[in-house]
Length: 162
Image 1 (tube, rainbow, N blue to C red):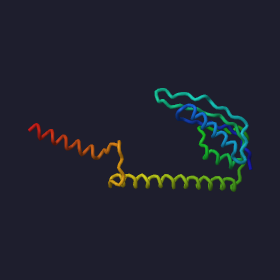
Image 2: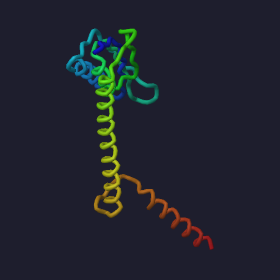
Image 3: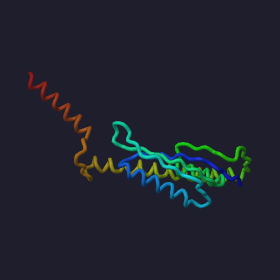
Image 4: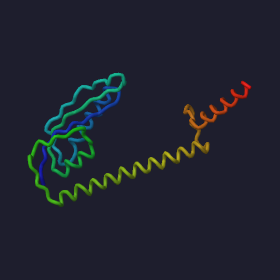
């Protein structure tokens, strides 16, 4: 199987600045603990505040080596903002290598789809419970009730003008 040498750029955003630095550092450590992954070098940028947003952003540049299948799976696990394959310049793949990768890709996509569907169902259940009065939410504006109140207020104003 082909050995890949690549550079990954991982970006992170949040607050406070110290937190995103520690999280980015932890991500790099986790990447280094991955089986069959060798980190050659890593550099972290200092967090910078996004103007007017009160949140920070930072990035890390990581050079690593891994077998092709492992490398492709790392891309889905860590979702880098940018990748650059340094070596090899040319790749020759067997269909079994692609089969392993694509089957793992499909498994992950099904997992994400399952999570998304479960969240949509949970959201719908919570909305129904709120509408039925089973859950009382304080501090949240009920748009439908506000619209109804607005219509009632307009009718009351029209009657008082007559």
